[in-house]
Image (cartoon, rainbow, N blue to C red):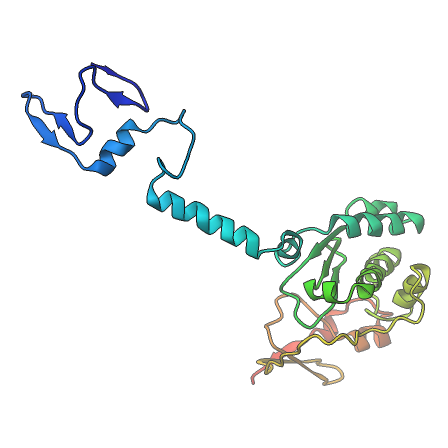
Length: 243
């Protein structure tokens, strides 16, 4: 008798459904176990020698691959948009923002529902709504719109600026979208949520309703601009109220 790692057989011919015990008697063995013992990794996988469950698994994968479009799946799963990323970096370099051009990332984010895009200047990240693929001319415009936010904050340094103020408008002109509006008019389905948290400025007493709890230290922008030249001032920090 000899034994291999993936092949187990006897020199003498033995029926595939039985095996020998220590006392020489025959022991019945299930056909499935016999098939596993006689299977070899060197054999090509065909429908004839493949277990039924394995066949079903491969069939399911084939059907799933045919139902999904690869590019659409990538866009809806937070994958990076390489072509748009290269274009955005070239725009930044042409405007002298070489430092952030090397750090900038552009991705598709399926968590965006009503917003066409989002810019995070701290992370140097632009997120785009996958529904933009239904409106191809708006992809480039939205990319430049969000890129203007990052460019405006880069030029302002640590100074706090209005999201759609004069700095952002100048960045839009430099990026070739003069007169850009702060909000899009695309027919994205809107879903309204009831605010669960309300914050108030201790100075102007203005209320700021929010769906989610504010985790960072946030101050009233109007009061900071009016009394501290747009810089953060702890005197105008928003305080939560009971709803």
